Each structure stands twice: as C-alpha cells, then as structure tokens.
Image (cartoon, rainbow over all chains, first blue to last red; front, side, top):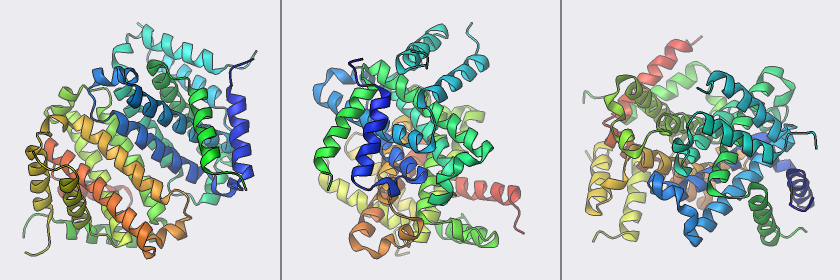
Length: 107
Length: 107
Length: 107
Length: 107
C-alpha cells in the first residue's frame, strides 16, 4: 500500500518520542492537555467565520494551510494518546458510531 | 484487510450524516465546536488523576471504558471535520511530524 | 455592597475546597483541565446553533438555564485557578485589553 | 473604590467592541469559540509540567507572565460572552457553587 496509513503514523510517533526521550512526558494526562491546546488553535482559525465562510475556508490557500496544519497537530496528539493508552482509535470510533446509530435511528 | 480502517470510518460517518440529513449541520465551524465538547469530556476523565494514575487509567474497567468511549467520540468529530474540509488526516499529521522533526532534531 | 462580588466568590471557593480537603487536588494543572471540561460543556450547548440562534439562546428557558449554569461552572474554575496562582483576574484581563487596544487601534 | 472591578471590565469590553464595530462578530457562538482558543493557550502553558511544577509556575517570571496573560485573555472572552448573553458571571458561579455544596456535603 502506497499511502501512509495509521499504523505508520503510530510507529513514527513512537520513534519520534523515543529518539528524544520524551516518552516520560507522554502521560495520558499531559497528552490530553496537549490535545486541548491544539484543538484550541484549530478552533481559533474558525472562530470569527460564519458557518458558510468556514465551509469555504480551504479555498483560501493561507487559511487552508493553517487549518490543515492544525488538524495534523490534533491528529498527532490524539493518535499518540490512544497509543499510550492501548486504544484502537478507529475501532473506538466505530463502536461509538454504532451506539449513536442506535440512539438516533435513521428515519 | 479485516480490521476496520480509516476509509471505512469516513464512509460510515458520511452515511450516518446523510441518512439523518445532518450534513447541513456539519459545517467546519460546528464540527470544530463538537470536537471541543468531546475533548472536554475526555479531559474531564483525567483531570483529578496524577500523571501516574492517568498512565494506569485503563486498568480500571469502568474508567477505562469511559476514556475509550471519549477517545472514540473525539476521533469521530476529527475524522468528520477533516472529511468535510477535504483534508487527509494521516497525511496532515505526517507532514506536521516531519516539521517537528526538523524543529526538534533528535540528539 | 449587596450584590455578591468577586472577592466573595474567591472566598467561598477557598472555603468549599478547604472544607472538603480538596486543596491538594487543586493544582494549576488539574484546575486548567477542569476549566477545559467546563468550557467543553458550554461550547456543546451552542455547537449546532447558527450564530443568530446562539444570540437568542437565553430566550429558551431550558437552554438558557443550561448555558447560564455552564458559564457559572467555567467562572468557578477560572476564579479558583487564578486564586491558587495569585493572579488578579480582573487586573489580568484589563492589562490584556489595554494591550489589544494598542495592537488594534480604534479607527 | 480604587481597584478595577468587574463592572469596569464589562464596560471597557463593550466600548472596545463598539469602537471597532466588532459587536457583529461577538455572537455567543463565536465568543465561545474564542474562549476555547484562549483556554487552549492557557492549558498549553501547563501541559508538560508536573502538578508540583505547575504549582510553582508563577515563580518563573517569564512563564508566570505568560500564564497571567492567558488567564487575562480567558477572562476577557468569558466576561464578554456572559455580557452579550445577559448572564451575571458572579451570580451564576455562586449558584453553581451552592448546587455543588448540596451534591458534595462537607464531612
């Protein structure tokens, strides 16, 4: 498979932390805070836009690049947090989606 | 491949939204807010734990199930947000990780 | 002065924590996480509303009561965090507002 | 009274927004997002610290100044949000504290 996949990302994040001896900082508590900080930066990119403007944000190359970068940062910390907790990110999401489908049946 | 992968999750989230006609609520602005709410719930699970306790949170079946569920919810909204913006979640993360590797060279 | 003021709130929060021996949990790190959780709940109340609907949210008695309660929770943790750090909440805000006035001069 | 109080801050924030014609951006939805962004910056200041280190963060003049500034920013948006919603910040907090005292009686 050519595209980088989630297993690669998990592995790259592990190596990145190990190479810098940052594993000791990567407690779930600290990573959840880092995730908060990155979500805050992502939200800040959209805060003054109308919903309609937010839907077109990728049409602006500069704003689009910033949004993309912030999404990347959020994904980094979410992936790392799930990894240190031993949670399968995709499976956890699929399970919650299945729950939601029961709670909100399609018409 | 047998395990559910990210492409499946993206597709399931699209169908879930379409089946309920919720696409009109799923602006990037609204989804970023929903992501914030879910991150807040995840953080709340860890807020009174010491870093050491947080590292062992999955050993407690009840707390562990809650943390796993919150991670699932965060992943749902992050995946959906990236999808409506046309951002490849894994690629965006890999790019930011490559940036970080340049900014913080391994010793 | 008859209205409850900020000094009273600070004092009540101190006593509340002391009476329950919760001071040891109230590190800045933990309180910042608790603040995050409460902001997440506040944001969740507004996430699917249009900006216009959000401006009228207090007209709905039930939604209005929830929003008011979440604002109260956010204020509790922000006040407590500032107190344990020895930061004067109003003065810190006034200083940042003065900075903003320099950065964004009025036309 | 010599110290700047909350009523002054509310008034200064109103004038600041009016002078720049920013009132139209200050919907509750947008302000809640701005609050999220500022809380994210505050959390980021504390994310890699141990709880003990976080308790001493004000001893470091540079980190302390950053934390104080972020608290100021959070207070700005919380105060402005409460004002546009017509919510009395202190009263809302006192009410929630009274609720908490009932739910968690002192021993």
